[in-house]
Amino acid sequence: MTQPRRQYGDQVPDDNAPHPAERAPLDVAELRLQAVSPERLWSSLEVADALESSNVTLAALARAGAASGAVLVAEEQTAGRGRRDRTWTAPKYSSVLLSVLIRPTAEPARWGWVPLLTAMAVVDALGEFGVSATVKWPNDVLVGHRKIAGVLCEVVPAPGGNTVVVGWGINVDQEADELPGDAATSLRLEGGRVDRAALVVEVLAAWESWYLRWEADDDRLATAYTRHSSTLGQDVRLNLPDGSQLLGRATRIDARGGLVVVAAGRAHVVAAADVIHLRQAAT
Image (tube, rainbow, N blue to C red; front, side, top):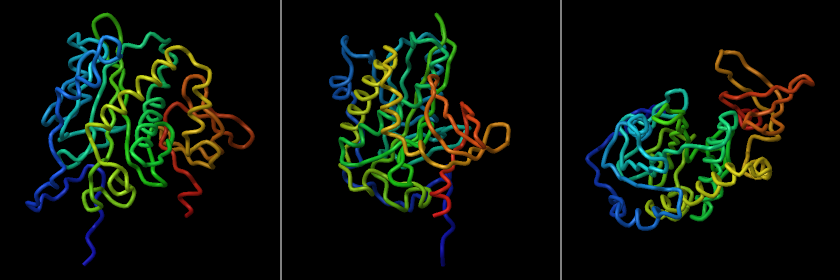
């Protein structure tokens, strides 16, 4: 009998099956040694055994005055969130689930670039582990047509001014039956090197590199995003927040991180939407 496909956020049955031997807790002392230093962007790093959401927890710490550069890693999230409050769950020790707190000095009008540069950092880090990925605007990370990582960014009021909490989840060690259907994949399934600790260090380093380039207003950022993108140049259907749709050709990213879509000879700049690649949908 065919089992119904799970949806994102459904609980994965336990079946009392043991975790594979390589699923082990992260060594927080070793992570701090490799990622945190006065010369780095990261000022602190904590690992929690289980959280409802690393973003929610770190946002509360931001409102309480936590320092910029804080990193919070969760071994398991019981109520992880994606964009538009979609849920994100995974077996314990199977993923990289982390959030960072940052206080940008760039103009707030440019903060729309933060989720985009986060997705680029994830793509770069995955490449170091043998997996070639792309960014589906604004910030889903795909291998082929399957999602391997997602990003959630939130502006959080805090003492001294607004901060940004950036969270991302990367599927690392899941087998096919631990994922929510054929639309998702993992580092293991793609033949990549499965090492969560090394991936945490690599993705933090990649994020820092892209972030500093963005803060410096590097005019090559849009060109770099184009290289990472699987959306630009595609015919797309955008499901907009107001419930309407826009069909057209995704052509470029604007200075604020918006997607420029040409429809009926007119250019539209979209700041937020769910994107469907029409060629992929037809296939």
